[in-house]
Every structure is written in C-alpha cells, then in structure tokens.
Amino acid sequence: MKTITDTDKDYFCDIQAPCFQLLTKDEIEQVQASRTQVLFRKGENLTKQGAFASYVLFIVTGFVKQMIEGDSTRGYNLKIVRPGEFLGLSSVFGRNTFDYSAIALTDVQTFLIEKEVIAKLISTDGKFAFSIIKRYCEQSNLLFDSISKLVYKQMNGRLADTLLYLSPDEYSGVNIFPVLSRKDIAEFAGISTESTVKLLKTFEKDGLISLKDKDIILLDRKALQEISRRG
Image 1 (cartoon, helix red, strand yellow):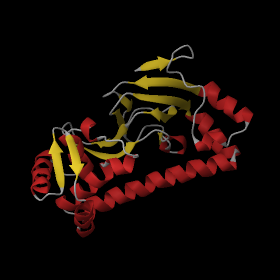
Image 2 (tube, rainbow, N blue to C red):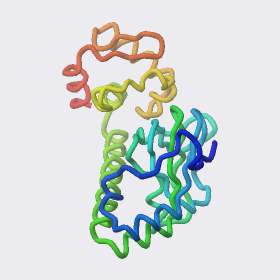
Image 3 (spheres, rainbow, N blue to C red):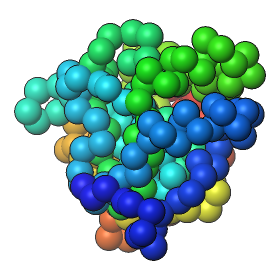
C-alpha cells in the first residue's frame, strides 16, 4: 500500500464519478479535504472483514474482489468491484466495521474518504443522496441474486452464472479471467475448487468454453445462459 501525494505522477486531482459532479463547490472542497489517495498492490487487502471502518473507498482504477470470509480454507466471492464503484458504504449508517473483505486483483488506485463527510453530504444534498442510495440498492440487489443462486441452483447452473458474470462482455471488453485462480472462480460459484475444475473440463469437452492456462474463453454463451436458466 502506498499513499499518493500531489507530487506523484499517478495523482488524480478530481474524483471522476457522476455523484461527485453533483456537488457544490463548497461540498467538493469538503471531500477534497477529507480524502487520501492510496495505491494498493495486487493481492493486498483494501478492507478486512470485521475491521474498524473509518472511511469509504472509491475505486479509481483497477479491479477488486469483494468477498465474505469463511474458515481458513474457503470463502464466498460476492462481486468484482470496478472503477467508479464504492467499498464500505454499509459502514456509513450501519456497523462501524467492514462487513466483507476486499482484495486487489490488480494494482488499484483508490480514494479513501472519511465516512463522516459522506454521511453529512447524504443528509444535506438530496441529489448526492439519491445517487448513493441508488448505488447501495444495486449492491443489495446483487447480494439477493447471490443468495438466490446459492439456494436454488445446482453446481452446473452456478458455474455457468459465474462464467457469464466474469466474461469480458460484462466488463467493457476487459478480460479478468487471467487474474483469477480456479479457487477464485469456485468461490464465486459457491462450490469446491475440485468440482469447479471438473465442470470446467466438462464444459470445454461440450464445446461451451475453451481453457488456455488461466484464461477462459466463452464459445457458446447461449448454451451457458440456458444452463444458468435451468439451474
């Protein structure tokens, strides 16, 4: 982890997000005064489940794995957090700890913003509050979708869901499969690593995907969507 100062070449002057563009000049100054720009290296924790949360993180560049930690060998991956998204919003009005861990899949540039400032802006600026609430609801919907997948779908459906979710089509053409291990993919699907490896080979044999080292190429999205639909 490295703090970025205004003399560094990687320093960002403005937070380029629609919700911050809605702020007044005085409100922007409040955010700027409370923010710290930090570079997290690949593999580092941005948040730790159960740790005290004094700030909200805004992702500027890079990709982050958001996960619920279980025992020492298994967890459950909730989502990939992309540039322009927040981590830690639930701590603004909820518990004073992070509900999940977040791990950098690539080098990640972030702004750490004091959560009291975010809470103040939400209480005084309706447009900003609407934007934040909308983001929070989207995160809640994703969580409910994840629970539904775990409850109602079998392993084939879960893995098909995961492959479709992680495909470059969902990330503006950016391929994140090479930065994910088979264990990562298993923890997105909520199944064991061994079962994931076996199912991936079955999907490849059936002509649905192509495996090349860590990369996974989807060859038949319609068939995967049908597997996902059937569960």
